Image (tube, rainbow, N blue to C red; front, side, top):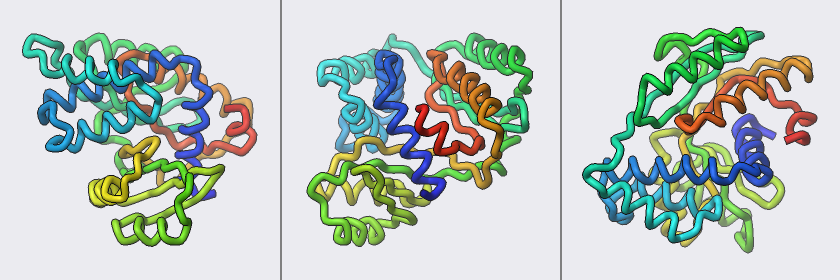
Length: 246
């Protein structure tokens, strides 16, 4: 399994087993709200909103919730969200890159710093970890009745770098610059991905003993549980054993 495919599989399994669905919904609602404020409420003319809606459907968010989130984004006196990133290291040299959407920057940085400090980590300066990660478009598509060879050719034509089939799902990786073209190709084919997003993929991963890796993952979950945190990326190598536990 390639590194890209592994990250997609982890995300899918974790999402399927995640009991905190309300947390998942709240993160998607924020993304929809920001997308509307940034580019308007018409999905046809707003690629970011179109993607956010697709991801909302991917986690089975009810249509009414999606429509309310769009309406919230149109409110002139609604909350204005900031999109912020934080970077730092946890123990054993594990790098962590955190993407946030918040209406209170002071609260967010205070919460993030507190977690780093409590677990002997260190919050770094913005840009300090850019050299460790590269941004890639990651799409997760149910295989369904799709013909493997035909689908792969279509994706390669759209700019896909890597396509893997695992447990009934295609994991498609593209360069950040080709994210839009792959998204458009899927739309043209009438295919709705379960998830589509830009991820920060580590150039290299760090392997730890199982118990140390579990401790790191618990800290990462604390970051993910924060209401202001949208995504957390790291360079910890996830073993098959840890994947099974997820």
